[in-house]
Length: 182
Image 1 (cartoon, one colour):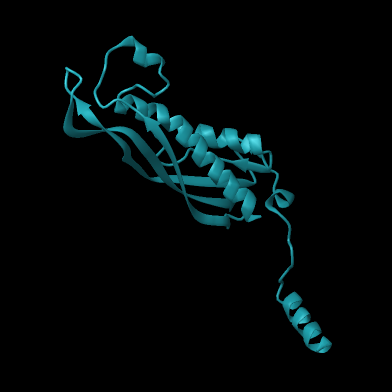
Image 2 (cartoon, helix red, strand yellow):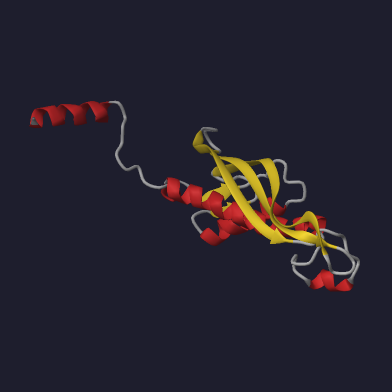
């Protein structure tokens, strides 16, 4: 029995297999994040850089990092999840339902590449993140809506406001995937 275990260990060591090679941060010190594909205004890239710096596993650099984190935004989806009955001007309800709450979801694919060898160290992984926000169905020009933090804005304005927390949620999940994988 012992000789069988020794033979297996000898075979595994001869083919270069190593037990417990350590985590990524032991082998790499810096990470580079190119502009995220399909991030039109840089909101998601900014959130990811901030979250990587906050996590502290790697030092973020603009160029020349030992690791390159490639991220592509694949799909945005918004679904209405909250409804109410529409009201007439006299405050009577109608039979028409209108959306007042929406869930915004983004799907991204990420991979971590060693910049020296161009080999993929981690991934590709698909990551989903979502946020929910309230909104008015009808557009309003009242000044009170400007200060409502998305609670009373029309759907288009509320969707724009919700992109920042969505970027933070996606960045947290990406950093968690990197951290948990090694």
